[in-house]
Each structure stands twice: as structure tokens, then as C-alpha cells.
Picture (cartoon, rainbow, N blue to C red):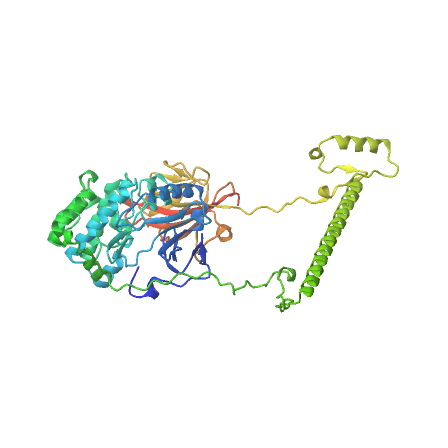
Amino acid sequence: MNNAGATEVFQPLQPDDPPLVAGYRIAARLGAGGMGRVYLSHTQGGRPVAIKVVRPELADNPAFRRRFRREIAAARRVRGAYTAELIDAAADGVPPWLATLYVPGPSLTEAVARRGPLPVPAVLWLMAGVAEALQAIHDAGIVHRDLKPSNVLLAADGPRVIDFGISLASDVTSHTTTGAAIGTPSFMAPEQAAAGEVTAATDVFALGQTAAFAALGEPLYGDGPAVSVLYRIVNDEPDLSLLPEQLRPLIARCLAADPEERVTPAEVVEWCRQRLGKDADAGGGPAVWRDIAGPQVTVPPPVPNPTQGYTLPSVGWPQSAVPAPQPAWPRPPMPVNPEERRTRRRRTALIAIASVTTGALLLAGLTWTAMNAANRLRDWGAAAPSTPSPKASARSSASSTSSSAATPASEAGGRRTPEASLPASTTPKPPQAVPYPQQWLDENNSLNIKDPVERKDRKGDIRFGCKLAGCELESDTSVIALSYDKPGAILDSCRLTLTDAGRHRLPLAAAANGSEICIKHPSGDIALLVIQVKSTALPDSGISFVMADMTIWRAA
């Protein structure tokens, strides 16, 4: 969060933003991420909180909700001085949401962009604080998987690590389960980039990269296409020569290629305390952070509850449902004469008796009317013709002893009952969209249109492959077409894209991040792939892949 100004931190709500989430009144929009939108709200006591609302396509995925529920349960156990504590959540909400304490401070990314590389003491305080946060996270059985500068907020009293324990909830494939598709390429560990096992040591590698970014003002492994950065992380030794000499030994231990050789978070804390010396014992961190975080912005106040003077508009309501304003009749003066008081009491008693009597008569009349109507309806449904034939009489007798469910159009005197005369609803239900977020495709796996979607072989409907001419998607069963319409393809736009399509191969040279690909299966199912990450620049590197969000409309 950038503290340059409140207008940059707290964005006004848009028409599609909710004013209320599970009782939390929304004051401003804070941003958006891969899982959904983030809003500013407040607890009942006025404490600011960040509300993250899950995207609808993820919320509709039962597998996501199960993972989200598990991760919320784990995140509730995290209690650390350097974490943004999870205080409330609902995995079964509509939509799912979670609330963490709001941290009034910029992210490390924004602080470095504003003031440049951090001094050595600030980097030491940063590493100690983030390492202590990782201890709390790992003790709860969570691996962060996406530790990076934008997930480290700089409060006035130290750093705060956010989004812990939540990234795993977005995993849907075996690759993402081990972390390959979760994370930011510039801050991944080698085993993460190569689709290996993700452990607590993976977060330590990201800590080293985050600290190097703070000291250098740029990513340690450089910028550029994701595939190039991942290739350097997997195959090259990091160049630490530009780092301040005091930081090199610790960062080098964090960045060991073998996870077993990396330093632990507890060792990072101890190493930093030794280098900080007296400042660590005297608690000199806050002075450092006040200089780095910059001036604090004013957090918007809580949104007040609607006042009683506010009334909902009556547009669209029947006039009978909108009560007319009643005149404020003056209260009659109380009688002061004793005889007048007795007269007033007798009059009130007579009025009450008359009211009760009238009500009883009215109730009796309504009851008689209802019984009479019921008798008429019963007679109407059960009455036989004036001269019933023996056959009709037998049919009527048989129908009275049989189950009503066995004769949907029962006859009584040649008439159909009112229920039987009502036409059955024949309105077809629209195809339901089934989301499969963050699907991973490379030369070792494939995707199915039918469940199960993920395959760890090359026998699925959609395959990824690279040749001398470049990388492509191919299928033996389905038609594939690239959508050139405006972003945000839906079922109707995919149907239009596939109208004249007949190709089973799609070269990916013209596709980019955000490109939309429509696929039609012979069963009638239609799928939409939205590319999130495409790594095809080096086909022979062994790390070419496509990660995409997939939505399938069954029997469309």
C-alpha cells in the first residue's frame, strides 16, 4: 500500500463493489489480487481490517472451498508479532471471505520504489522480522509459497507478512500442490520453479531474494520474461557481488540451491540480532521503520449505520405495501372531574367489549366462509354425474382406494383435478460454468474436458508441445480456436468463435498472457482457457509451460 496519499491507498467503491460483507461495512477498496478484491472495513470497536472477497469463479468451485476452509483453519493458529493476524473468515459464505488486521504502511515494493535501496541496518531488521513471521507461519503447519516484497508491509513498528496460508487454497493440480504454479517467478526457489517439493526451506529462499531486493532496489535474478528468470534461478548461481558485504554471508545461506543446506528462520533471527548489537536489545527498530515507511495516511473512519431517517425507495413496490404517513393526532386532555373520569372509563370498557364482540363475529364469519368454500371444492372435485354409468361408478370407487400418486390425471365424473390441469415446466436450465483455476500444461501432462480434468500423462484431450517451429496446443478430439473478441469471453462468445472452427492445433506464437482460447469437445462441452503465464521463449530449455484458468460449460 502506497502511503504517498490517501487517494492512492484507499480507492472509492465502484458500482459492483458490495457495501456490506457479512456485517462488515465497506469503507474503501484497497486493491485486487488473484483470489479476489480487498476492501477496508472496521470491527465493531472501530479497529481497521482488510476484507478479502473471493472471486465468483473460485467460490463456485467445491474443491477450492475445501482447501480454503482448511487453510483458514490453519491460518487461525498463526499468532506472531510480524504477521497480519486473521481475525474472521467464512469459507461457506456467499461469496467466501476473510478478514485480517489492516496494516497502515506501504509494501516493501512501494517503499523501495519511493526511496531506493534500504540501508544495511534496515535490511537486518527486515530479515529478522520476516524470519520471525515465518517461524510463526511454519509452526502452524503452513508454507507461505509466495513470500515477496509486495507481501511484506512496513508498519511503523516493523514488517508484517501477509497472505500466508491462503495461496495453497488456489491450488488445483499436482504442480500447484507442490508449488510450481503458485508464486511469483522472480522470487521462486529452484525446486518451486522446477515443479519439485515445496517445504519451509522454500520460504527461506524467498526471504533471501526479498532481502536482496531491499538492499539492491531490484530483483536479484534480474527482470525480463518469466521463463528467462526461472531459467536463471534453476541453473545459475546468484551474483552477490553487488550486495553490501555485511549481508552477503546470510543471504548466500538463504539462497543455497539444496534446501537442506539453507539457514532456518531461527538462525536468521539470531544472526541479525548479533549484527545489530545494542540496537537489537534497545529496540531501535521503530525509529528505522518510521524513516522508511514515511508519513502515515489517515485511515477513513468506519461507515456509520443507516440512520432511521433513511427509507428505502418505494419504486417497484405495490402501493398497498407502502404505508401512508399517519397524522399525528393531538392527545386529548386528561379529565380532572371524578365523574368525568368514571364516564371515560365506562366508555372505554364498552368500546373494548364491542371491539372484542365484533372481532369474534368477524372471525366466525371468516371461518364459516372458509369451511363452506372447502366443502364446495370437495363436492366439486368428488361429485359424480347426475346419471353415472356403472363403469364410471366403478372407476370412481377404484380411484378412491388407490394412491393419488398413481393417477396423475385422476378422473372424477369425467373432470380433471386442478393440479392435473397445470402444465409441467419445460424451461431448460442454462449450462452451468464449472471453474478449474490455474491449470498447468507442459510436455509431461495433459488436460481432460471430462472429469478428472488433470492427467499426468499425454492421453488427455488438450496437450502442450514444443517443436522447432514453436509451442502449440493440440487435441485429437476437440476443436481449438483463439478468441479475438474483447476480453471477458463467455459461453455465447465462445460459441461464436467456434462456429466455423475446425482445427485441432493452435500455435501459441500469437497468444499472450490474458489470451482466451475456446475449445469444443465432441460431447458438446465447451471450455474456455484464459492464459495466465506462458513460457515458450526457450522451447529446448525444459521449462516451457502454460498456466491457464479453465472454465467448462457442460452439454452447452
